[in-house]
Amino acid sequence: MWMLYLAIGIGLLYAGLTFAIAAAQTKLLFPVDMAAASRAGLPQAAERIEIRTPEGPRLIGTRLASSLPDNAVRPLLLGFGGNAWNADVMALYLRSLFPEAEVVAFHYRGYSPSEGHPSAAALLADAVTIFDHLQREDPRPVIVVGFSIGSGVAAHLSRHRPLAGQILVTPFDSLKSLAADHFPWAPVRLFLRHHIETAEYLRGSGTPTALIVAGRDTVVPERRSTALREAVPKLVFDRTIADAGHNDLYDRPAFAQAMHDAYGRIMAATEPVLPPM
Image 1 (cartoon, rainbow, N blue to C red):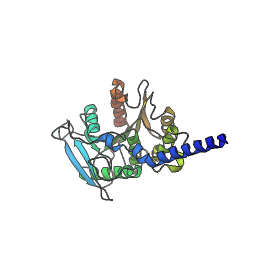
Image 2 (image 1 turned 135 degrees about the vertical axis):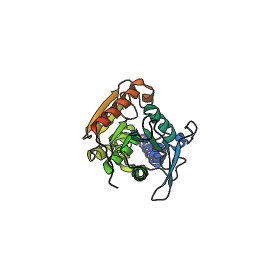
Image 3 (image 1 turned 60 degrees about the vertical axis):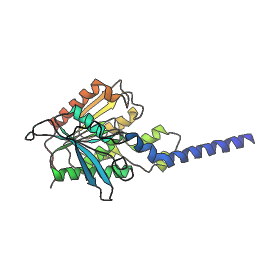
Image 4 (image 1 turned 90 degrees about the vertical axis):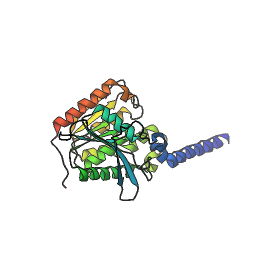
C-alpha cells in the first residue's frame, strides 16, 4: 500500500511542479522588474522616442546620435536586448562599441516605461512596428543587434523587413527547444505559450548574419547554437568566445573585438538596403 501512496505523492508533486511552471512561464521569460527603467547615465543629447502600437500600448525608446558629422554616412544600429536588459543600458553599451553609429533601442512591451504586457508575439510584432517607424522618419540601412532572446526578435525582423545585416549574440534555434532543455522532465512543448523560432526565421532570410557564441554558456547550451548555425543561409561571421559564459561574455575583451569584426564583415558583405517607400 505504501508504494501506492508513494506513487500518488510523486504524481501530485510532478503535476504541481508542472502546473507552477506553466502558470509562471510569462514571469520566468519576461522578468520585467529586473530591467527597471532609468535614464541615469544617458547623455543630455539622448533623444526619447515614443511609438504607439496598433493595439494601443506605447513603446519608449532611446536614440543616441553618431559621433560623426551630420553629412557623413552614419549607420543605424537597432538593438534588441535580453529578457532582463534595460534598453537604455544596452544603447549606451552599443554606443561605447560603435561611437560612429547612431544607436536606437526600445524597452520591450511591458518593460517600463513602455506600456502593455510582454509576450513573445508582442516583441516580434513590435520590432516590425519600430523598424517601420524609424524608416518613415529617416530611410537608411539598418543593422540589428540581438542579444539572447533579442536574437530571435532580430531574426524575425530580418525575415519580414530588408536589413543591411544582423549580429546575433548567444542565439538559440527555438525557444521551445531551449525551454525543453532546461526542464527536460516537464512537457513544456505542450504548454509553452510563447514561441520564438529563430532558426525558422533565418531560413527565410537572406540578411548577412554574424553569430557570436559563449563557449561556456549554460543558459543557451551549445546544441541550441549549433542547430541555429545550420539554419543560417548567409553566415558571414561566426565566433565562439571559448572561456565565456552567457552573462560574463560582455566583460571579455575578446567579445568587443568579435563585435567589431562582425560589424566589419557585415559592412563588407552588404550593399545599402532600403525598404520600398
